[in-house]
Length: 184
Image (cartoon, rainbow, N blue to C red; front, side, top):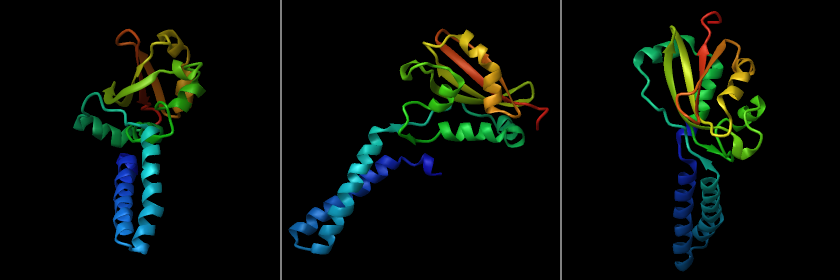
């Protein structure tokens, strides 16, 4: 729930209101409100601005999820699939890209600017199983590198997860995390 809230905007708004109250109270010589406004308002405003600078927006769904796929998710989705979906569809702070640590551990990128960029997700049914499909811009990591890491990807996101890696267009890679029907 908190991940869906634009925390930086909330802090900026509250900080600005309290700071304004502090200034008004200062000119009206109300010491208590003056202190509250300055001691809570200014740090809140600055904290909100700091969060805004380090904010990573949620990854959008590239297409709506059908009711049939939602039912499959309820029945078959692994805890890891649910965690990945929830993590990338909420505001994050202090990260440059979504799944940055995961990509580093999988060896998909040697430097920060060479990591694939997650820019969309969707949910689908693949051969009767629930699949979470991660859509990456992958200009610096070729499809062959992704495919070499397939076993490592399945171990990392498993148990109960199979992977399918496709390239729908140049410099694009889709990683499908598919619930293994044997494990459910």
